Picture 1: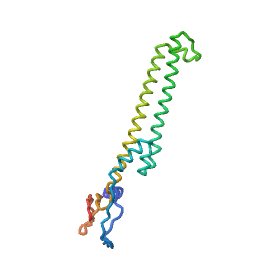
Picture 2: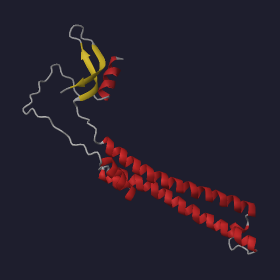
Picture 3: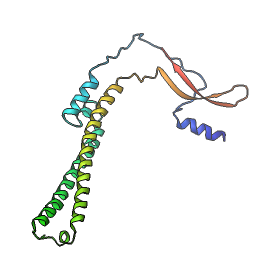
Picture 4: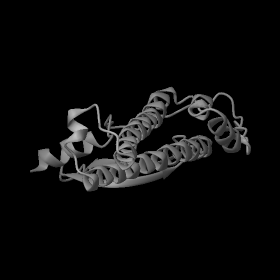
Length: 184
């Protein structure tokens, strides 16, 4: 059972165990200041609003660009396909009302109520696809904005929350815990 805990803590980021602490010598005692650009999230959102995926490129998250275009492109494909099918069934219904016969055997076998039902279904699918296009476009802008804002947070090792393994020198028993360390 003890080995399970050891493997668990090794899995969660415990990379090395030292019996003695290493002293770190600081040669230059200078404070490193990072510049924070308050307009970075707004720029990323603006770029994504102009051209979807451009905000992700600005944030240097290139792997997100195919996801953006895949989502928007798939929605556009389904919108066009649903609109095309809607027009086919709507034209057939109009031709029947005008007294014209259909060239297609499949469409000729459908009743007028079936034509209306299929027509409504493709209209609903078209409207949902349009909603998805707008939704993915807005999601693209929000993602670029949030990613740019979060990229400016300090994630240095000065503040760490890590799992710790302590071995007692008296009983040689290993204790597990979590340590929160802040160094200046």
